Image 1 (cartoon, rainbow, N blue to C red):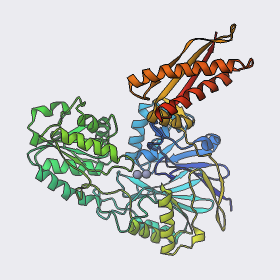
Image 2: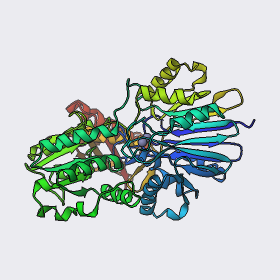
Image 3: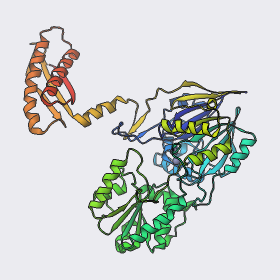
Image 4: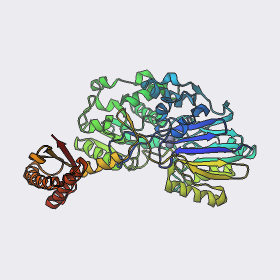
Length: 553
Ligand SMILES: [Zn+2]
Ligand SMILES: [Zn+2]
C-alpha cells in the first residue's frame, strides 16, 4: 500500500508550537498549528513558531488543517500559515470561535473556510476520512482525531485528561477508541506526553468547585479577584457560579477574558445570566463583598491585567486591603519568578493572595500515568509516537508504553523536524526536514536569526561600550580623541573616568596600526575592539559588548 509520512514540525521536545503534517503522495493534512511562548534564552521574542517551510514548499498538496482545541500552542501560528496559504480549517465550534477572533484581528478571515465538526462526526478532508471524538481537557470542546490513511488509522489524542466528572458532562469517548482498535485497528497512536512522568491520575475539574467555595467563604468580606486562563471556560464557570452563590456580581478584567466569555456565552457553552454581570467601570458603585472580578494574568505576563494591577498601573482597579486574590492556576515552568514577584506586589498593596500552593485551587488539563495507561489500553495501537512534551516526557511516555506491554520496536521517539514513514510492516524515521532554528516573532517582525539572542544576553548582562575613531586618510592619522560611549556597563562616574583612559589607549593602538600602510577598515575595527575589550576587562573584570566604529575622512 501507499506509504504515509508524518512530519513533526513542532511540539516534540518542547511544549508548544504543535504542528504535524500527515502526507500521502498527493495530499497533506495539517494537524494543529500552534505557537510557543519563548523562555529566558530568547529575550525580547514574543512568540516562537513551527518552521513552516516544509509546508510552504508543498502548498499545493495541503487539503486542510485540523485544530484539535483552542489553546495557543495549537492554533497560535495559524495566522502565519494563512499569510501564505489559503486552506480550510476544521475544529469544534468553540475552537473555531477562538480561531476566528484571532484571524479577525489580523484581517485574515477571508483566507480560510472555517468548517465546524461535532463530537462523533465523520467527514472527509481530501482523501482522509476523519472521525472526531470528544476529549476532556482544560479548554472546552477538544477533539481526538481518528484519521483514515492509505496505511490505516492514525489516532491523535489531542491534549487530554480523562476527567470522569467534567463540568459539561462531555466525557472522553474511550469506548469509541476501543471499538476502532478492534475494527479497523489503530496503526499509529500519537499521544499527549505532558504529564507522562507523573504517577496517578489528575483530579477532576469538578473538584475545584469545593475549594473555590471555601476560599470565597474564608474571604467573605473582601472583594475577590479570581484569575485563571481566559480559555479555561469551565474554570470561569465554576468561579462565576461560586461568586453568584455568594451574592456577588461578576466583572471581567483583561480583554481576552471578556472576549472568551462572550464567545462561550454566545455558543451556549457558558451560562451566566446578564443580571449577574457588571461592567468593570461600574464596580466602584458596589461594596467589595458583592463583587468578583474574573481576571487574566495568572502568568504575570508584563502587560497583563493582574500584573498591571499589582504594580498600581491598572486603569480599572486599584488593589488594597479590601482585596483577596485567588490564582486558580499554576505558574508555567519558567514563569515562577515573575509570578512570585507579582504575588509580592499584590501583598505589598495589602491584598491577601491564595495561589496554587493552597490545595485544590487548580488542576492540570493533562492526564497522568493512569490516564495514559487507560488510553493506551483502549487504543492498543500497532505503532506509537509520543507527542506533546519535553524530551524527558517523551522518554517517560515510551517507558510507560513498554511497561503496559507495547514492544520497544513499536515505539518511535521523534523530535521536532523529524519525518517518519508508516509502511505496510514498519514505522521508520526518514529524515530531519528542518534545521531546528525556529522562526520567531518580535513586535511586527518575523525573524529567523537566533544570534540576536546571544547579543541581547551580553547586552542584558554586561552592557556595551562603543569606541568610535575618525581617521584622516590624507595624513594617515587619528583625528582628535576617539569617542568612548558606554551603556549599562558601570556607574556613570566610573564610566567617565575609564572612558578617558580607554580613549587614549585606542588612539595609541590605532596609530600603531596605521603604520601598516595597508590597514583596512576591518583590520582597524578589529584593532579597536581588541584594545577596548582588553582594557575594559583589565580595568573592570567585565566583558560588555564592544562596538568599534572606524570612520575615514
Ligand atoms: Zn498543548
Ligand atoms: Zn491544550
